[in-house]
Length: 228
Image (cartoon, rainbow, N blue to C red; front, side, top):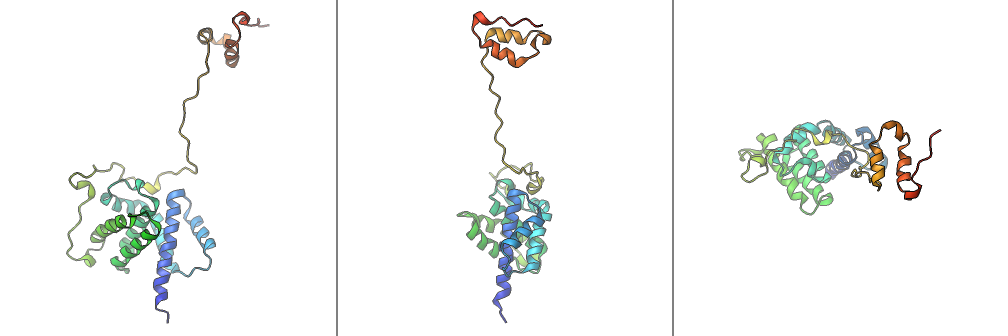
């Protein structure tokens, strides 16, 4: 009766799945928590629930295999992609690989449209190029006699093979908060006498923090009190 509804619902499912995969890449939250958050945030949205579930959980579950498929056709390690581009490539590759009932042109067009909305200025061109290559590999029956694309690393002048390509970026441990770079502790200014005192036997330095204080006293007052 409403012929436009299925397409609209499928688009909404992809858009919501994109938000979920993006959140997963950025924060490393659990799939169940992400789905619960999206359901709470968009309680009335009409989407293709089956497609949403399959894509959201499938991308997270198969992220290692999907990254391994994508990586040879990138011009950089996948960890250096923007989270939006990375999420869209995971979504598109998952659909190309597992949802064979969806035409590859539809998958690519949907990913490109979402990249135009959420990605950078030319991010949609990048997503389009990578998924177009992957469609030839993953959907040979649909793409016909198109030439098989060569991995980017094998192009003349391309970057060398990425040694971390087989390490799923999405599976690397994530930190809940960004660490500040470690700095070397500042060494307190001490006199020559305090430096010499550091070389004395341990028994004579039972309170190291006292030596620093003692070194800053006037020369005439540098006699330590006798120990009882």
